[in-house]
Image (cartoon, rainbow, N blue to C red; front, top):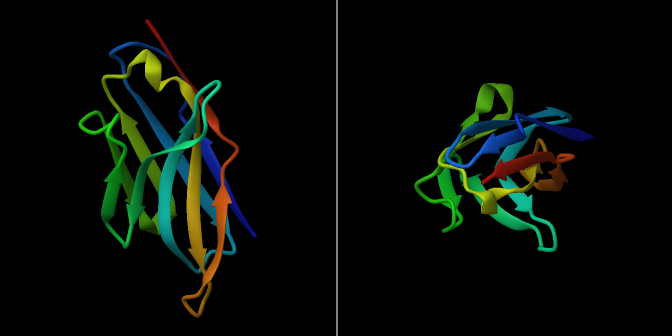
Length: 121
């Protein structure tokens, strides 16, 4: 079983910064993809930033130039540096990981419990 634990959320004023962390632990042989999603009140969950294929990255248009995703493979940890935060960034942010087994086969997709980010005007 795999567990994902997020941290770093909180309340910040518009224009401020936060750094989210997500640490994966458990029965991990290989992680194919890690990323961040968010869900704002009344809206569906959306992709924010992902690391795929080792070091490839993918960002939502709404956060390009402001957010940076990075990964520490040795710690199975992914980070999201969020700068120039806007009130519309307010959401619960969820960590996501796609896990491979020892044979390199897809083993499952896992989600963290979420961390609240609130950006005030």
